[in-house]
Amino acid sequence: MPTRALIDFDVDINPGEVVGLIGPNGAGKTTLIRIIMGFDNADSGSVSVFGIDNQDFRFKQLVGFQSDNQYRSKTMKTFDFLVLNSILAGFPNNDEQIYTMLEYFKLSQAEDKSLVSLSKGMRQKVELISSFIGKPKLVVLDEPTAALDPPSVFELRDFISEQKKSGMTILFSSHHLTEVEKVSDRILFIDSGELKGNVLTSEAGPGFIEEAFRRYESERRFI
Image (cartoon, rainbow, N blue to C red):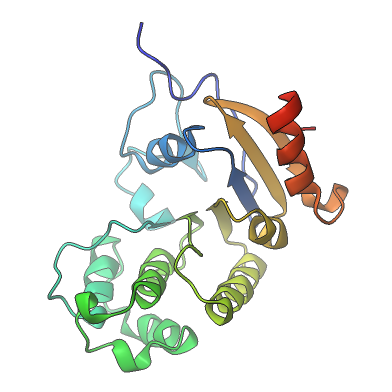
């Protein structure tokens, strides 16, 4: 019998909410993200954003996605890459927003440079900009701080806070527990494809997530 990566996974994410997704390696986080984005199909159930199914062509205009495997051309320039992604997302003539985000993330000097010439941290910021193009309703971030230096992490944290104020919903998957705790309103903990914990950070004290993770490793319970 084949192993199921996710088992009876049912969760709602509220508009304007930042939700952290954590769990050990192999827990099913990547599978969940791929199903949300429509890259993989679930055996049953569905995924929708504001009533739009993830198989609907309109879905790509509602959802932004960041990962570290987006590049199609090593010779493509930063600005051209972002314009292409904007067009593919259904937002042509979006240069003003792209320029604004390049400036915010201190990448204006890199707009005419090829992606391959950028540092890993700079490429990650380009990926982040790509995910926010068009001001989507939901943005899915997969290890968004992995290659960022501390000042860039602070920039992203502040940027997420501003987007949340505008009503944007963000799913933030990371192994950096402290950062997840800082940016998230709610945290989902999954393991072996099952939802083991669903916690509001406002009801948990500082350092709760690390403590709960350690407890799970020893007692197999998250809360």
